[in-house]
Length: 53
Image (cartoon, rainbow, N blue to C red; front, side):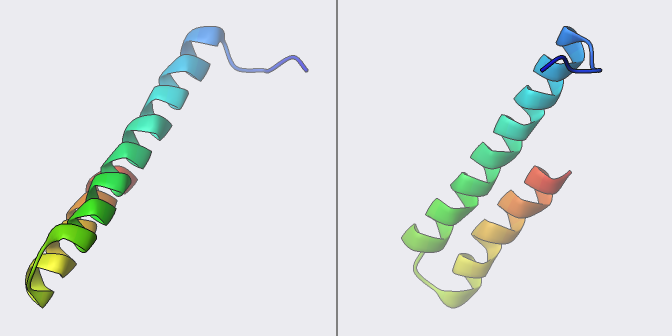
């Protein structure tokens, strides 16, 4: 299937998707590893905020 996007734009979009997924995964690790309730909430929200951005 031929894409309408140029190759360089497809690579750029893919890189941003992978970067967002890695930030979200880091937030998930924060949810598992941190001790108190407020620290556990802080890890995933920072990862998802930056990942969505």
